[in-house]
Length: 248
Image (cartoon, rainbow, N blue to C red; front, side):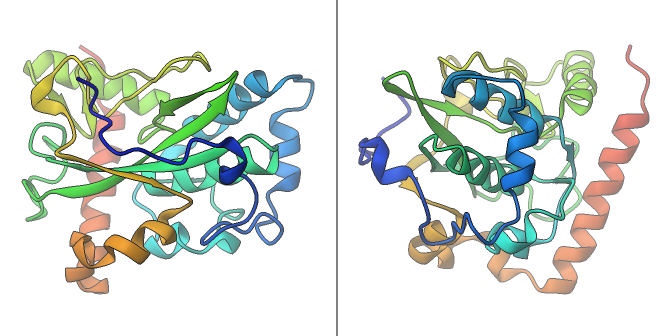
């Protein structure tokens, strides 16, 4: 049985243009999108080029305001999965490729090993977006990605050495590539029932669109700004240390 349990409006035209939390004209991203697809033709190859750009951005916890303020996307050269999903969706829509966010509720115990253990958030359910892209008559569900390829390699090594099911937001069978045709998920594995989302919450235009319905359930709303900044600093320090490790 598929982990996708919520039906969405699958008409691609519904997932184009501006919407709540999506402002294509005010983001300053048009030139960035054009540079990413320079010399590329066809929607699939454009989507792949945009994916590689976003996936390659350095992963780090970013200012939560960036997730809901499209005007702030252009000035960011790295960020977390929320930021990457938001950026990629804007870039895709600028290139007239339908895109949306499918939000899920995850149990982080397995995939956050070594990252949130010290932040008193380990074990808390949390909500996360996966980007869905319409290409060649169907939707692909893709992480865009929560970590960049260089960090992904370090995490995979860490998982293997410690014989873990997952760590640092990566499942042991997670992938860091996408072919533009199939689903490609880094955070969990459809063949590992224990890793699957606790709930599929459906499709939304943006982080802001999701918050309109589920904002009161977001764990970070119960954390003060200072506490978030302290936690983000700890997490980013842990990631810097992981990047500096030599592979086994």
